[in-house]
Image 1: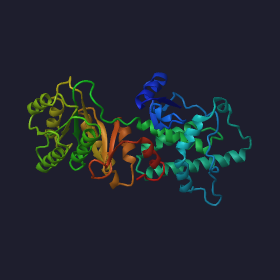
Image 2 (image 1 turned 120 degrees about the vertical axis):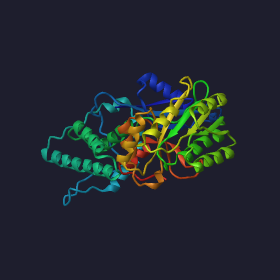
Image 3 (image 1 turned 30 degrees about the vertical axis):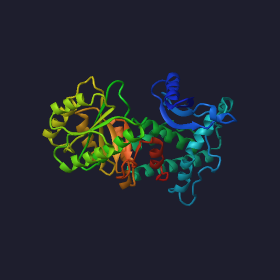
Image 4 (image 1 turned 135 degrees about the vertical axis):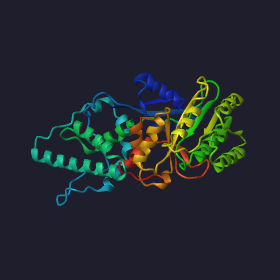
Length: 396
């Protein structure tokens, strides 16, 4: 795995430099603004630094043991080999970003030291036992966070295949953390079209919060970004949903239309061709109703293919994984989509975010954590999510 920093005047410029050197498969792990120093810092242009990672074909043995300077190696309890302090795991996770920053800042010459082999068999056995306990703790933590057993096993198996004698536990934890971030990939939020409006469909089951999610996104685009927004709804089944979206449109002072047919949808595309975004709410159909699926399919594919469009599948983080796979499999047969998870504030576990990412391969875009418009929404943060899945504290 390659981890490297790039700088630029904007995030886009830094990412472009990263892709130019490492390829398009890089995953952004951290973005921060560099504070200028010196007397004339005010006159200097803004500088943004991104940390990116790239999975190599083979996991390389680290050239230097990775360790946390403030914590002693995890010790096994002689009287009880089945438990390891979760506080220690949490402390280690809290320091992962510092660890990565320290490793990146070290000179290349200091990275050439090989991990020493310990010839004493008893100590090796003890370390191996310690590693087994540590991996079991990580596995159980992921299961407690409702990561599907299949995916948790894959993650642990991958570590065990690449585990070598005297491999520091801190390195193993850091490696798992980075690999899980790579599994999530880069978050994929709504971006402007190259030409003309971007048409965005929001689909998903009833009751997951599609309409409120649209209002939050529309508020950001209109109020924060100053974009021209049009709100449409094809949900003619629930009067309350249409009226709710109409209310948000009035508050934001943006046009609102109810579309009853594909012809009306096409007419709306012409009417709002000078706008930046056309956001379309859809009925919360049952994914098992064939007639409703056909109607949804017809609507999504009635738009002129020259108009740039995307589909976002909105699902609740509180839904059972088996039901989520059924929902996503149904929509995958209709169209390509990106994922939005709602109601993160109503669950203590986030395993389904990883489960559905690995099941569908779809990009994660936004997560919501409450009903407040426009505050309770953010672009999906893989670092924060992985940290919790491995036992870190839930960030408020």
